[in-house]
Length: 101
Figure 1 (cartoon, one colour):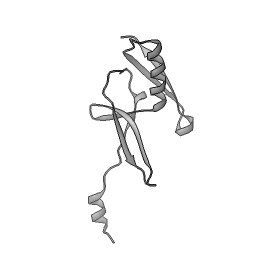
Figure 2: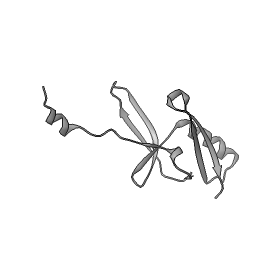
Figure 3: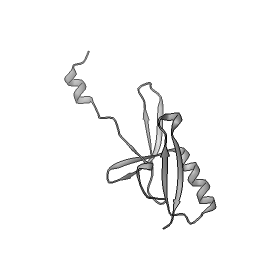
């Protein structure tokens, strides 16, 4: 058995991330990292993110897929914006919009 004080000392705030759609302009050359963790059900999950001024911005895989298609057609693409609509896992939609330098 443990005490509340022991649990408080072990407690870590959940990692909070913003979404890449929160940014007005994103460079395709920004550094990105992959984060892996295990949820409370014991299942592994992960996501790609970029970090700006200490804030981690998650990059959904659908955004990466759209960017890949854009770069195929616009090889010199440098900047983009992500428009996000809807809420929840099933209702969220993303649209990657190319921006001029």
